Image (cartoon, rainbow, N blue to C red; front, side):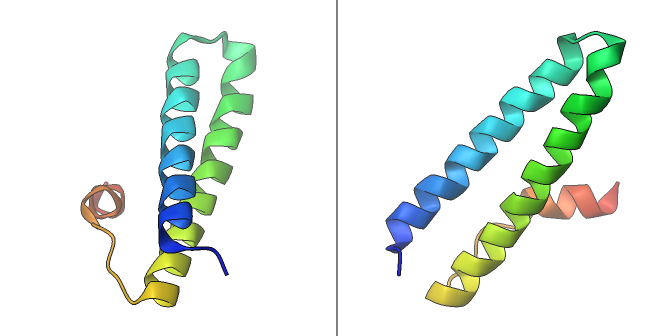
Length: 73
């Protein structure tokens, strides 16, 4: 089983990658936009899955602020 710090690093790297992908959406051509949007959706799903896994395995709570904003919109 992975240590919590390794899982947190993985979680943070996915967040960083997702932010980079979102920047690509802002500056890409219309033809590329759908591709980057689909990639961003998959990264978002993985981020949520990993968050739940960390919380369940280690009985911790990761801040829901960003997820709360997503649900309100």
